[in-house]
Image 1: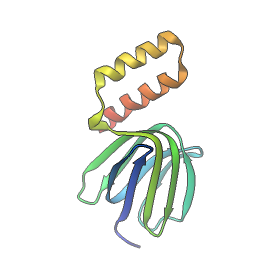
Image 2: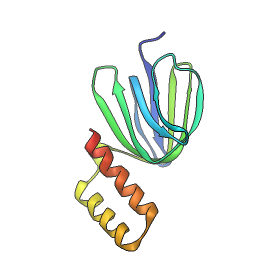
Image 3: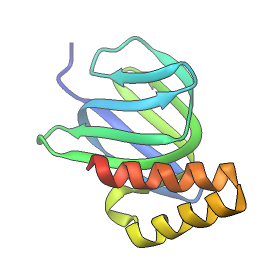
Image 4: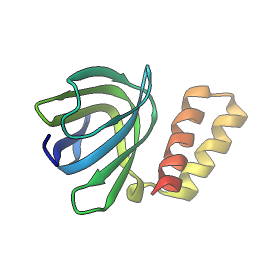
Length: 124
């Protein structure tokens, strides 16, 4: 079994993060999944939620991901997201305001996006 896997986190508009990792945890339509080097090949649908990447140097990268696909084969993990942002890119006050506005407007989709952003920040 290899000690690392190569990870590509890509949003529709940009490459968000790329590098070597020892573990990636993401939410799929089937539930949360952890992928380590040597994992069985997979293809799945990403649900909105934080994605945690444990980097090879022992660091942690957290991103808020809003839908997309995940695939793994030959120790290469691709996370292809509709929208993705690293937790350190998230403006907490803006996300809190967006959450309150979504709740008052009864906009479940906007509420879910704001909630995922805040959870990603809390996870880092």
